[in-house]
Image 1: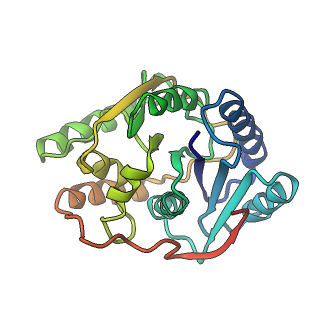
Image 2: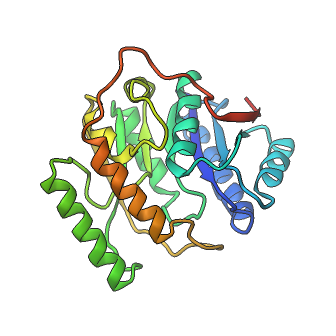
Amino acid sequence: MERYFIVVPCYNEQEVLPETIKRLGDCLKRLTGEGLASPDSRVLFVNDGSSDRTWELITAANGFDGRFAGLCLDRNRGHQTALTEGLMCAREFRAVSVSIDADLQDDVDAIYEMAKKRAAGAHIVCGVRASRATDTFLKRSTAHAYYKIMRLLGSSLIYDHADFRLMGPEALDALALYHGDDLFLRGLITRLGYPCETVSYDRAERFAGESKYTLKKMLKLAARGFASGRMRPMSVARESYTHTKELIGL
């Protein structure tokens, strides 16, 4: 059995985190119980410079249950950098990573389907939304326009896929050759040399708290998407823990 790290970027998530800890703990228990993940697997929370009790809750979870681990970044670095830091930690431990946001909008049950595809030999498995029924009309319209523009510019983005995905250690090795902060991960995964399989799921309403993706951050993400098409892999892998101030549970 392979070791799994469920990687969860967190920025001011104190309202939702207790439920997130519960659900992902149950998910990890099922993965190990069904023989899809080894007993030393972890839920890895990455605290992205939160100003609330997020890190306090993560450390408390680790004290209660060693399956919960945490990385605390030196300051707020942004979602993509926090996620990359967690993925590179999984790579260092030669673990299969499953990235998921803390807000519980992505379907935790879809992780089992991803793990089954990994057991069958998949290197990358992407969670793809079955519909955008929970989005506003404006958000649906802008999302469709964004994907069309990106494809016209030559990007091979997977439609309706964000950052809910499984990556094996070999795919993480390929990702580690791309250097820099604030990488546009969904624009890079199709360029790593491994086929991307998919799992369809229904996206839920946010369980608690507010979305951290402001219009400004969404526009910045789009700009990173344009830039990612020009990135080239390096010959040497990036370092792990570039921005980590504290590490617990590993």
